[in-house]
Image (tube, rainbow, N blue to C red; front, side, top):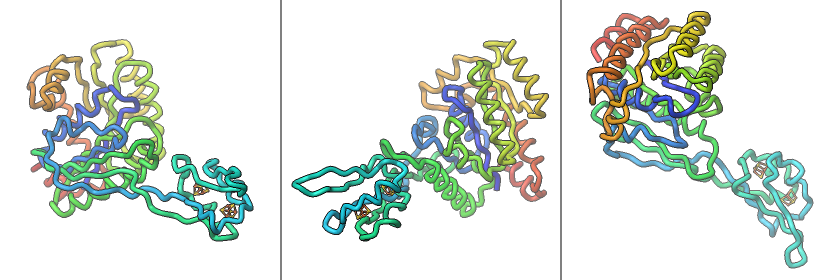
Length: 309
Ligand code: SF4
Ligand code: SF4
């Protein structure tokens, strides 16, 4: 089973649009939207919702003031300044700021009165939908909730379970932006990372940071230059950089108004047009298939399986 992750560093590089097209071209895959803070892949895949599940992503400390002796030990141990106190009705009362509490449990461990309780809290929801390109696993993290890395890991595991059950060989993952915890949760142990960049200085900078991450976690990586023709000087520098770092450029995509037109119609670029950006994405997919087939550990059976997708 292959896990192909598409990442881009910052948003707006055309990553999700590309994932939508790859989902079409792969024909038989499990699709995962790991951008749990701003999931939007469903806009391109017109899913039919099958299952909704609560996601318990954290715990919350609460203080029982009937048991609390107001010793103040918990406040000194909480590294998130989540425990507050004030005199109320002549008694020093302690309480936990639920937005600041990270659920680490340290306060409860050191409380001499066992006055601190924990309850699991629902931090989001995850969904399983059907699309004409394959099952879609996606999620929504609640407002002001953290721990999106844990939710990402959960989505990836669900996708693996489905792929095993349905005997699908490819999991296509739309990665979150940035290089923080959710991205690390998305790429750790993945088969291949496809980095989408564009000829802009900020995207170039993100590319360097993402490659460092890929190298650190020893995940093979390839590169796509989107809108390569809007700044050919910078595209040339990205190509030189890729050559120096021995990173394969799997494809380039020109600026094409068809991309926006496809989005407006809620379909992928390759469904919208076979020319321009659509043609380049098809070439990119053919190159990508060869990259995936050449990965270490791909045996003949797996290669044949990918060929017949
Ligand atoms: S669980 Fe951790 S973060 Fe929450 S109040 Fe206790 S020590 Fe602070
Ligand atoms: S450590 Fe326990 S007893 Fe002391 S103030 Fe905190 S909750 Fe109250």
